[in-house]
Amino acid sequence: MPDSHLQGETLQQTSAHGSRRRAVLTAAHVVANSRFLQIQRSSDRFSSNKLQARVVAICHEADLALLAADDQESLADCEPLNVADADKLPGVFDRVRVCGYPVGGNSCSITEGVLSRIEVREYSHSLRESMALTVDAAINSGNSGGPLLDANTGEVIGVAFQKLVAQGVELQGHAVPAPLIRRFLAQAVAAPPTVSGASERPLQILMPSLGCDFQSTESLALRQSLALGSGQSGLLVLQSTQYSSGGGGDNDCLKPGDVLLAFDGLELDSHGFCEVLGHRLHFSAARDLRCVGETVPLRVWRAGCETTLNFVLRASRHLIPRGQFDCQPSFFICGGLVFQPLSLEYMQCWNGGEPAHLQYLLYEGRITADRDEIVFLSQILADEVNQGYGSGYVGAPVVRTLNGQRVRNLAHLVQIIQTTRTHLIHAREARISSSTDSACFLEFELETSGVPWRLVLPLVGLDAADSRISSLYGIPN
Image (cartoon, rainbow, N blue to C red; front, side, top):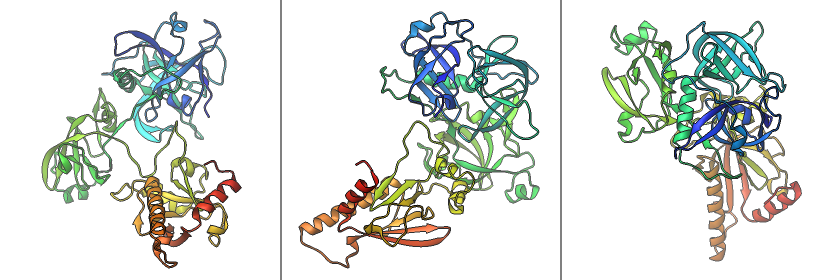
């Protein structure tokens, strides 16, 4: 769990009602999964007293969070920092300063360097690619959430969130750029006011997605096979999550075989780069300046013709979620069988030794009409009701069907089990019984690396077995 004692940069926020209150901007990974937060100002200038705070808005994908102190008067003498404009980016070689508390300490540390480059790169907190600033000023543990300042104007041009650690690599720190910060703050301010209280959940801000996998069209043979003209370039759509963008139906969705020529009026080259705020960046940088739910025009090459789609941006969705925070893992136990939805966090527990079939699903699995979550058997709590199937870890087989029904997600599996149990009760009330009736069993079809496995539980006596297992293994009801 992240440290609940943190320092960040103070900003002035205007609420929807026009009143002004102080807020603290920091990195999402600093406060992720926290239960109790305190903020403290630099002790070389202010009192060392810690102030209780809460998260009011958070965007894990962009690694940004906004905190509010319970005692607003305690920040009244803090001068807020100004965030740079949303319509510009700093220039390479601009001098910058990083402020923070590297490796602990109570006094603010300041390092200076230059902006090395601006590019789209992976954010380690969310494993999602987005626009980032690279600086050669030292960024170390404890700098996260601190401001990256323009050395000339003192404006906030970024929020430090990570550094590249590798053999032979030095002085490569990264910061969330001001346009993304402005977008985050604008959404936080525009959200409806919430009631203050300890149980209040923070506003969850999501980043937009096109829901597709793309490929470069650099190959001349590929371009010719697509009948692209000499003046046309873009990205080939390989796979899509196949959801409708809304309003226009499937005709406004990107489809496999399409070539994305332009995003929101920005012409793409064969690698997907375009002009974004005065810099040549991957078009995903422009995508992330828009919000979920907004409609953007996409110029597409489809079946030998150019067409324009009015595409509604949606939040990212993955068959296996790419990082879950501020939530409890879900599971369901039936007859000692422990079922869970597959998650990145479970995969990371293996430290690189995860089962091959789960690794394949992580990288190649896609949401389909009949499955939007991978449900697997994580372990068996041994009992006479499940005797003969092993105990403990049994290879993490994936659940394909239950009683002949394709399992969409964990909630669907629970629904099938509950419905089958209810049918048995009704059958008993009607005094209909048969020891060979398939309705008297739960038949799970599982699979591990293509190898099928059938697991059957009897419905008769299952309630007693669940109670017995809960008592034996200390499972709360």
